[in-house]
Image 1 (cartoon, helix red, strand yellow):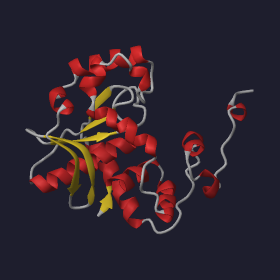
Image 2 (cartoon, rainbow, N blue to C red):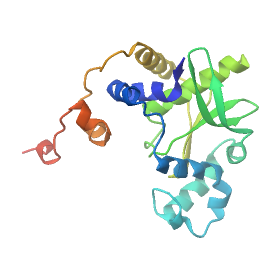
Image 3 (cartoon, rainbow, N blue to C red):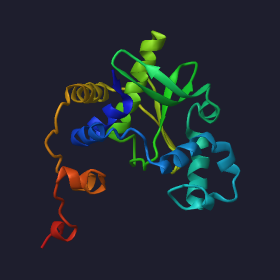
Length: 216
């Protein structure tokens, strides 16, 4: 079985997954734990007068407004605040990993992301990771799981993930990539992703400067 994190990384950049495995880099940075912990403290954060001390990614006023709106508009908010289980290990037919929260009736896994959400929906790797968690939970429970969630606690945002045909296809493609990876894949050549990658120097990718990408 492949790990949820490996399948998500294969979606983002197969070459990055190769280097992660090469160096056995499976632990997230320490800063990630502090951000993810926000997802388990929403009630306190809604009432907090000192949000500036928290690892949030926006101003305290914006965070307070966004989280307040999220608490009103998000279905199953009460369960997200007080989930049936937390940090649950799931093992399915093809993938395994941790769901940061588990909702019941109906069952739904929740993935907590330390990053920034897109304007709408979720990023591809997080959608694939949520799909992997939903499929693993479905395998364990012997029932369909159709609506996992992704939380972005540093921004006070929660998104429900629709398991569309396209998203399931992306999951299967990433799973095949992770399973078959036995050497360094071609470089991605994506300036934005490569500049932020911790394996950039080892990978040897070259990114253009902002000035070089400006029209003459």
